[in-house]
Length: 173
Ligand code: HEM
Image (tube, rainbow, N blue to C red; front, top):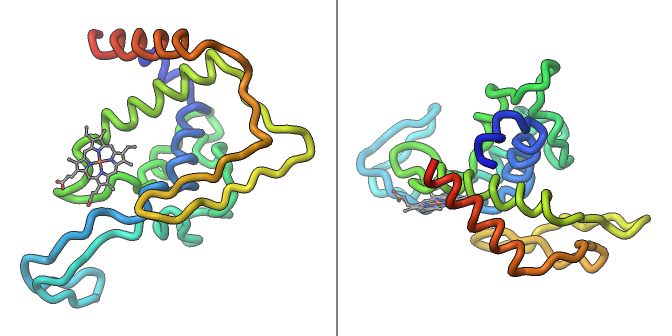
């Protein structure tokens, strides 16, 4: 299933938009400057606590058109490919030397779990309902439980079996 990734631009665009729009890790881990430094004209003294506001970057109106709208298509070029120039602007794993070491596995897991869920289940929202996407603020941001969200039936054990099978296939190949 993982080898299909390059052939699924909309799925990849959906994941990028989910990372950008939710920005579910709004800030990086706090770091400290080891010497006096200057960043884009701002003087930052040694020993100052610094971290990146990832949520702000991902909603910056200078970078994104309609930043609060969830629109995966923004990442797809007219040729149907992912716009790498734009996708590189999504920040959720930090930056620089101390960025997340689990980024590759994190992205892989999101792809596999979402692909398996979409392949095996059918998701829908009750007619005439607008889903409230306002997050619950915190160290990581979560969405509220949505009572209008429906998932068609499949046994949990069957789903887990598929998930483990796909992970094994991906790790062995
Ligand atoms: C979607 C999943 C994940 C997200 C969004 C995420 C995000 C982050 C962020 C924002 C940081 C802070 C980077 C910084 O301060 O500049 C971080 C650090 C870190 N992450 Fe992740 N992470 C994810 C998954 C993982 C996984 C799967 C692992 C391990 C297998 C992992 C291991 C770590 C470690 C060890 C650090 C500290 C790195 C350091 O301080 O040098 N993360 N992550």
